[in-house]
Image (cartoon, rainbow, N blue to C red; front, side, top):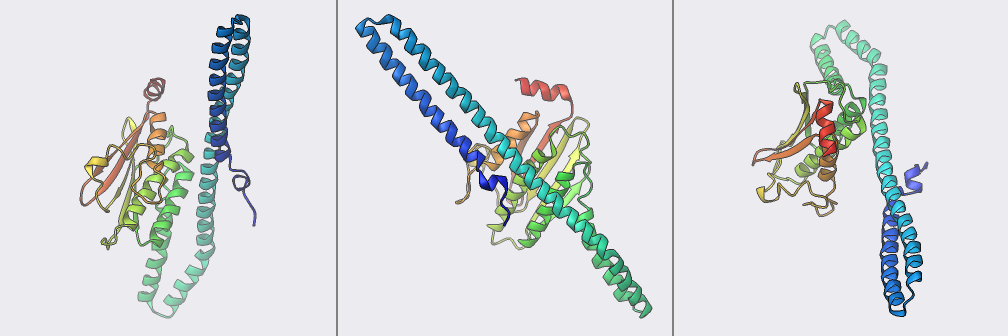
Length: 298
């Protein structure tokens, strides 16, 4: 089995390890420096204080640079992972489209045969079934971001396999969206996954539904991810975007914090509205460049 580069080398894990090691190194250098200064002062060796301090500061500065590079490498590794996932989703969508094109002639032959057999009712039923399958894929080919289109198609299939209906409402193409496609996949993917998980755990709900709405206003690109699962208690609604916060026994509490971080980087925002019959995450990203730049400067 072919192993990916990320399977061979966990860059994120290595980056975290480098940060910890260098942080410990800095702490040790500070402790040594304090001890050396104190001892040198007691013994009257003033010249040695400067030499020791300079040497330890150089070592500490190198450790700081290593930490910065490690954090940068970790972020790049995370981006690469998301790009790989987005590429896989595009491949899956492309495969579905190729299959539909390949099957088109077969469908026509079946319909033609049913009409020849003077059975228009069965021909109509067959066409309706085929049209429904094609519409499920075609309905997500409306944004100007291929990666987002592929993500939606993949998430719809994933939800269907779990008995959840994912309704798609695309009222805007999101052309010139300032957020890169792979990062919008992280935003929407995390929100849809959270909604899916909430519904999977809701055993009393027989009609599990998620609704994704993509829209825009004159000043912003907007989206809404809503599910009909259990409400989020008001007491924790302000905490759900914090890193590490989770209500799942096997969760890490990073999904929603990542969503908020990405949106804020481009001057956007997100908030939650939750009641007994529906929970919705509503977000937006401004269109105007000066708004985005001012937010990032602050």
